[in-house]
Length: 292
Image (cartoon, rainbow, N blue to C red; front, side, top):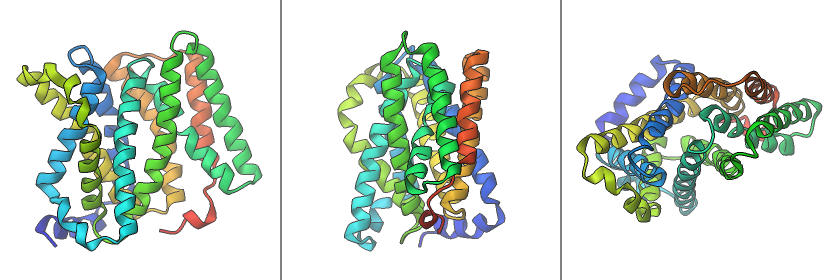
């Protein structure tokens, strides 16, 4: 094991899992908020490519994730491949969505899939209430803006489905075999290969050092800090607990949207986001997913 792996093991127990989650929650939307500002200089898909590739380079230099391939079972390798594909598609869909809709709206819709999955796994009154609240919140949000940006909502719902897959796959990675962070780095390298054709959309960044550095910063803020802290949190929290804590993310997205992008939500939008937050808070994960 390399020295950074030893250090992370020694440090992790001293830091509460909730602290890792809190840091990840902030950067989960702070990075995309910076990305929205970058859309004026680089195409949306180009920014998504810069995010993925810069994160992949950081993981490659820091963790050298290709060294763990021999340690993985064929099943674990398939999980990594799927996680890489999901990361690529999720990042592209998310950025395309926030180019058309407010960050808070996309951030709220992102969590509908988690509630739907829980409702399918545990058919009880609690999850029915959670699903009704969340669907009600989404209806309120879509009623406001659907006529103006239907494609934005298609992309937001696609991101929602992909985010659900990300949570499931990354939780498996965090609790199986070698270091979850090393496996995450390998998945990010796969995502970089999958998105290679998008490099042409990032052409303006290649002639502007400032723009290129901004794109790299977006990648570190969006795909290194939050994903690493997610892994550190998920390795020490039951999936049900982690899913419950996710309920604060739509609120974080709203605050960051206001502060960084001056996207001030209306009362109706706040009501829709509040309903989704309530649904995420109420829902109950399937019993078998509660074990680490």
